[in-house]
Image (cartoon, rainbow, N blue to C red; front, top):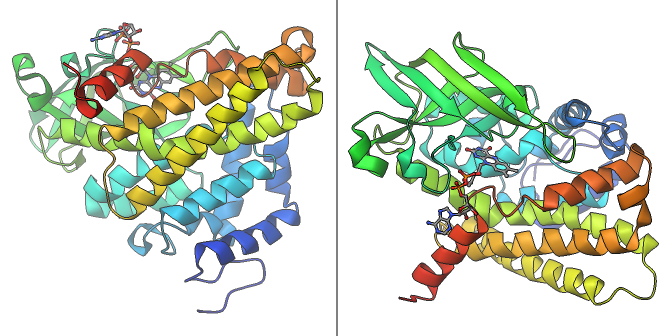
Length: 383
Ligand SMILES: Cc1cc2nc3c(=O)[nH]c(=O)nc-3n(C[C@H](O)[C@H](O)[C@H](O)COP(=O)(O)OP(=O)(O)OC[C@H]3O[C@@H](n4cnc5c(N)ncnc54)[C@H](O)[C@@H]3O)c2cc1C
């Protein structure tokens, strides 16, 4: 094991030692951690605090653990990342903001992205300076993603991209978009889609925020008007975008559940302070759902860490995550009167925003009905 500066991780730590050393670092309450622990009145403040935290984690080396050296990491595995975010949640960080995409898009970029480009930009994803977004859904192509209409037309050594994406999380803060676009005939459906990396600062890109029922606005509509994308910025193979999308969705529905559940568990533990003796079974439901998603998502992390792609099994991991997020918030609403009637600021406002958000978690990454359909057909082999 090599030596390290005080407060920085050595390379080659096993997950247990990494977690223990990271915990020590967090106990010192670095200012960036304190900022990320505060309730955030809006999306901008949350994102700013998370950028600050990512910078501090990168500077100290923690967030580089679990990523390969060729992408600016320090080696290690997905289990190190799982341990890092678990510790951050335990220490009061409320969510990952746009850095969710480190676990949704990051593994696919490293496996299927253009190697030189990815190696160049990934360190800036890790240090919080360049966020990413995922441009899949369109107004008429959500569940039926293969119906997407955004076009990428080859033009010399570039593609010219035109079209409209919707519900693009964190687009307003993103430097890069991993975009699905049609490069062949529409009738070929999923066989004529290419995954491209688009610079969100390119001429022709316009982002319009969409305000949600919880008052937050991390979702957006993004339009592309004849945007030039260098031909070398293809992820996977040209016309191989469907495989890229499935690779990403395996992480978004599978391993990501581990990262998300860490924050839900912390929220549940915080809300326990408000719980009365009678919970009408709601607390029991929340605890059971949380235990289920914890077990299944830990298995997903272990399996992915051993190299297995999750495939259809990620669908039930996502379903369990949705149940946990909803039952936890149902119980919180029933027991913490501040959520329904508390001030429109501070932790009451955060808990209320979390409640409203829990109503839409059955939609992102593919709707609940589509996940149930996958479980029925591909896992249970029902007719
Ligand atoms: C919080 C949030 C974040 C998101 N972030 C992103 C993002 O970053 N990037 C991105 O690209 N997209 C994102 N999305 C969009 C999301 O992926 C889509 O909303 C989702 O795939 C559903 O598509 P849709 O909204 O077009 O609904 P539709 O596909 O129109 O579905 C409407 C309803 O019909 C049901 N339905 C449709 N087809 C079937 C069928 N064949 N069988 C049974 N039921 C069916 C659905 O289950 C749903 O209840 C996000 C959504 C949310 C809520």
